[in-house]
Image 1 (tube, rainbow, N blue to C red):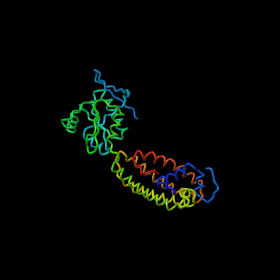
Image 2: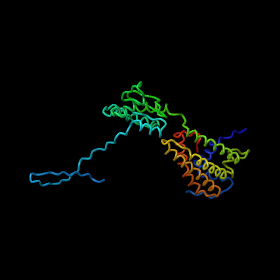
Image 3: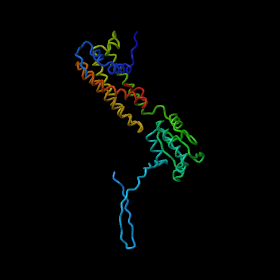
Image 4: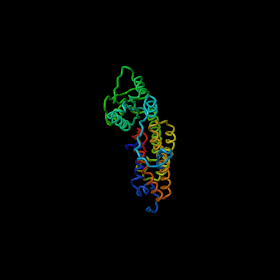
Length: 312
């Protein structure tokens, strides 16, 4: 008995055939149909007034030396922490003194580690009286933290881990990753949608493959364009369902790109099916060129978003 390929593997194999095999795939997908192949600043000024004994004034203009811009430190404290926790399930907090060079270096390492560990970032300045009091209330009187230190919080403002003393970016990133939830609620919702549509794709594929020919008949038989068009319609429905998932702010941009890539992939697969069915090899070649970067983008976004059920 022949084993049946999984729905996503089946569709991925068809996409691979489209992208890799080129013109040969065009002829295979058309089946018995044949066609002729074709190649295809304004300047800052300072004005000074000089008074002479006769009370006369002279005005001179000169260009000041440009000083390098110093980016101000982001405001810290509990307000910044709560805002970061809205956008990120995990937030790295750097406890530092702005007057100590080692603390500034530690803060920069903590910020880099937060970015590498896919976490939010904020600070508590121990020389700021308001922030120092907030930190004491946040941790309680029994917890003593000296600068520099890294505190890792998770929702809903719970201290999950602490690194006392200097910690480099790699240590901070690893600690943040360890605190991260393995799968957030929105990820479970999105993976559930993809799994549901995977079943529908499997059913569409089973209906398009003859019991005698198996997957080879799907690739070489005349029913392939119809199958690809069905897949495109299912992906469009899948995208509509995925579009209403409320994603964390930290993943919103990547998720928006993911949805857009999936939608464009569905449109191109449908267009490719029509080009194959009508024997338009030039258009099919153009579609293959446009399809390749979309599939590569989706492949890169899937692990980043932890959407293992949502593959092209």
